[in-house]
Length: 102
Image (cartoon, helix red, strand yellow):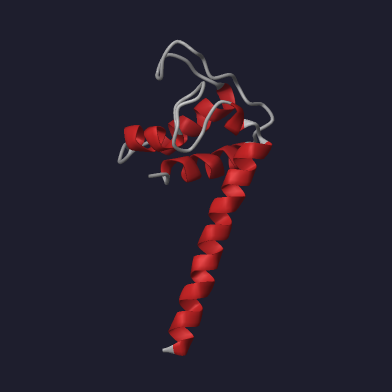
C-alpha cells in the first residue's frame, strides 16, 4: 500500500511538473502576450482552442503548423503571426499542452 502511494505521488509530481514546464515554455516564447488559459485576450483562450479541436483527427499537426507559420480567419479578424523562434518540437509540445486544457 505504501509503495503504491509513493508511486502515485511520483507520477503526479512528474505530470504537474510537465504542465508547469509547458506553461513556462509558453511564457518564454511570448505566447502568453496574446493568449491565456481561460480568458480570451488578443487570441482565443487555450481552453476554447482545446474545446474547438477536441477529437478532431489531424488537429495537433494543423495547430503545430499554425503556431510556427501563423494563420488568420479562424478566430476572427486578428491574424496570428508566424513564430520563427519556436522549433517544431517546441510547437508540438505547446500544442499538446493547449489541447489538454479544460
